[in-house]
Image (tube, rainbow, N blue to C red; front, side, top):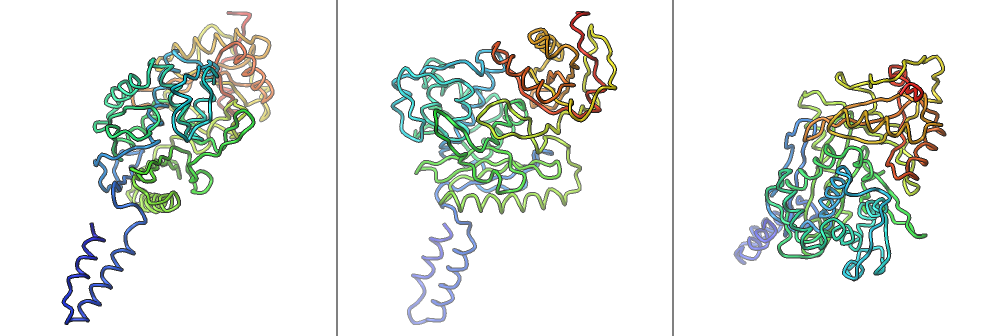
Length: 433
């Protein structure tokens, strides 16, 4: 609009007043150069301090636009929700339909009748933004992509996305599929807080599948300090979209940009918004909450780059150490080498976490007998989430235990546990159970 105004002013300046025409031209150029290099149609942005919920910046934040592949964030929310409810398993194989195989790129090129595991599907959605995989997931969860779109919309309303409608799982063009910058920020925060056990997958930089490697389209990862996710999107009608999450000094900002002119200009623009956002947030004097961590757990997936430590494992004041029927063991043998552990679940009920940890210990008794059950809690938008972990292992023991658990269709993650935390925990003695 400002560009059009500048052109209009320039064209209407009286021909007999060259000085006025020159001033108008200068004004037009100044306005044009001051604007961010984003597409005028559909531009929107927002920056939120996730620690406080404070909006640090917003432009057209409630204007409905095409989300493009940001839609896959909602698809992944549905997948994570199904995993948590036990409707899906990470190693479960999903079958590719003719409809899924026929969708437009970007895609993996799956063939009808082929299968893909849920684990690979998640990574393909995050990195390659594969449309065929999005349809496979939709059909597995809802029977049809159309029905899945209705379920996505219902879930979106449930988590506070008041102006979003979904018609497909991929974000391919559909005039009824609309969202806003504010709603996408809400969705990003819901993914972070509702599914912390899966959110770290958004930091995956490279995914390998059937001999090919795919780089994450989110180029802020590794380039903009503190970025740990989450998703890009593009169709012609939307321009270049991006939702980014960045953590610095224990404070997390979530930023959204719709309508970028190019991927590069969009990335530069969101980086400037984040720079300003951190300056405002840090100057506010509000103490930051030491959550979430900048370094995520080492996920036991061959396609992920190793991330060495889980800084969030230290318990909060009301974290729980299992006090069930186990013997207290000596911590004298603990060294920096055996401070590894295995996370076997995350639940809204602490007793479910305890039960899950005990079940895992019985599945792999040769490795987990003598480990320490640790229940840590973190904040979620729907309440506290209790993570079940078996600690006090060497790295080799933890990795071996997780491999055996996965072979037994038992999901797990390998994490590093602080030595002080392991020393506080009771030892699992299977002989006494």
